[in-house]
Image (cartoon, rainbow over all chains, first blue to last red; front, side, top):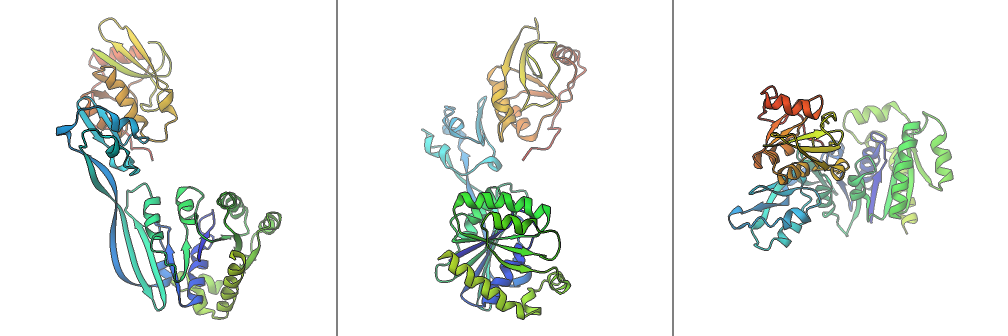
Length: 278
Length: 119
């Protein structure tokens, strides 16, 4: 089973929920940090990294020698990543979405694959917990290819927990699509509600079973609870705005380690998810 | 010589559009007689990305040797350079004023982009 943790708004507690759930389950569980623009699960999991791999995506390289300037490559490219201008074929690797169309249509077969670095994947573990995350190269504008790569490490023999990026655009969809359950995390504030609404609309379109965790649940107002009821979104857990939790977080410690009584609450959360995901 | 000028309207008295890739129109003006051709740039105005690259290809296809505009980003500049089209940034006033300023040597060609690319 794959559980993705998403939120819409950033900073609501996705990583807190994902890491504490994983650590409470102890074994036969893996965490995939798909927030490749700013991964932070490793700060709490503190994994031993066993493997670092550089990931590239194919981009065109043109051998102008054999090029007849027919423009077929430029015509098929939807992103202007390759153009013919004057007597030159220019390519813009940073705009390329790696569809391979230009190589396919080139009648002279003078376009070959070069690589654009997307970033690195780091794999490791902590005790029985399997850990993978991606780090997007600084300057790289597209995160979905690297997120897909992180997801390719999902193992069928254990529970996979995905920490998704915030927002509702391509990176989130890439992290959440095809997972078995989406655990949405919000805070009971107007901002939390606004972005939860956007995220829920996206998850509905994807048709994935979902439920809500309210973090810092004793602050803000009751609007999120009223919204969840209207939307039939079950609230599976509430985490209070507790100084001890904030202190643990600031030291990079999963709070279930400081407050072990919470482990049972996370295990119960998992049992609810199992039931709902069927 | 043909001079391309980004324009908010379709005649020589229109104001220069400071944007290049997303300019409303591009006028290709003949420096001899001020005859001109109007290129409608509406396809590029709403392009997600690569508007400057596409506009540069359009200007090159019409045989312009110089482009007068307000701001030119790095990808557009690289494309124009490949097409051997000179670029003068910071053009202003009407299209006619800009062409005259260029012909009088008051609008120098620049050797690099003057704005960051858009993501």
